[in-house]
Length: 341
Image 1: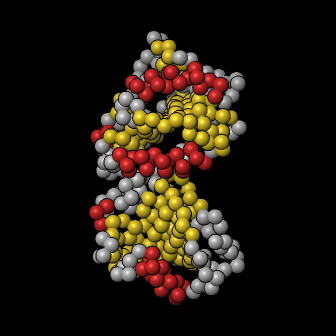
Image 2: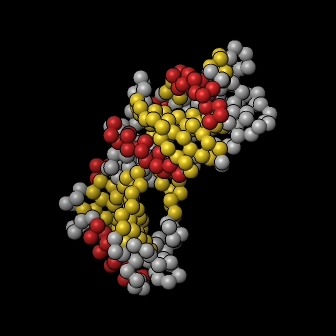
Image 3: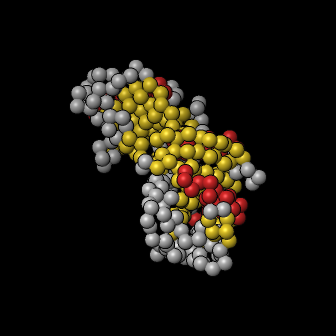
């Protein structure tokens, strides 16, 4: 259904956060560093080689050495391993590639900017089963890699370590890349290691990339202690009409449902025990503030449960209204913010 622009009519928007009672401990609202995954830098023909990794001020990694490098395909690996300052993982990076890092990630870029190694540490607060991990991977592929032009999955398999390996191809800034993404789930952590190579050097880089992954060590307990669940690696979801936007974890699966007067964008946690609904309702009628509350409550009962009970109702500083509610029959509770646009 087509919804008229905001200049012609006022729509009611309800960003809903629903949490089953059993999952209330999930730290969906915890604060912390937010990271949007960057695209790879465009390859250059003439770039000054980087002699050593460049840490951020708060990082204390092991510097790669120029001596005793181990040849691996078209790349050499540093003689000394890198240890992330959270203690959550270590690996041997390519020799001479420049380092950048944050509280839950690290990346290495080749001197010619034709290759990139990225490590992301995603914590969930509790272990996920195999089906939930698979959904998280699918969501990440959809929300991040699937946004690139020419994206296609070349192969998906499980390696000897039990990690899911996804080989894909995509176009970024006019350059075609082969990307190998390795997802390794242990306890309440999903490690994502992305190996990028411009197609002209992919065959030469891939043996070294495999060697890096084979030698990587992880410490899930250190990751759990250092990183809050679902507080990093988000993207900005924007309404088609530009009425609103908000941050969503890459690992939450997005689906859309449309009705005669509504558009519902749903973002499911990997285990489907928590989700966010963004409900945009527009029946062509003007919506006053006095009517908005009754309409919102009616929508919630229509979509979720007849016995939905509101336990708190409060106007927010930005003019929206917040409802805290629960459903005894459904066994879940939620928080809803609604406003007219």
